[in-house]
Image (cartoon, rainbow, N blue to C red; front, side, top):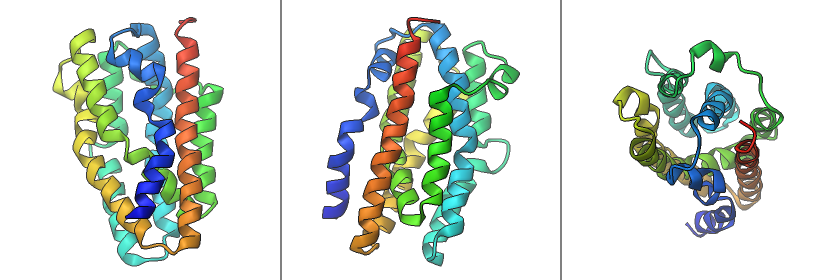
Length: 219
């Protein structure tokens, strides 16, 4: 697991819980308006995330690894409790209507995030898997931090409104572990590609939050 440990150390620079935007969230310093903008913009990443996963699954050369990725994809997209739907429920709890979310125009940083993840898939399986791991390894702690902040400072306590986050507290912990197991089985050349993809993916998420942080003084 030395490879995974080294990757985790490299990714710590982009630990999103250290970003000023998420720190402000955990301290109750974000306005409702910026939370609404965040919900509208981040929806585009949530809505396209199953397609990233589908792309990674489709180019995975190992059937056992594909089965693992397929289970992850099913969790994201199947049924009425699919994750884009859960995100819309959260957005509604902030006072957004669904159309304002689903039809919101992507800001430049949002488009960069969405396009960037699709481009990582185009760069190959190992690169894309590294980016997936960089995202999912952080998600449980971030989701719990968001839940705590929403309950404490924004009076959002309804379980349906919080379900997107409660689901990810547990699900992405084992999804990240599964990704780590697959990454550990790659040869050194592919692991190098995965490490590069992980850093690119982490930077895309960080840059998106940079834009949200800048918008705090505008909305």
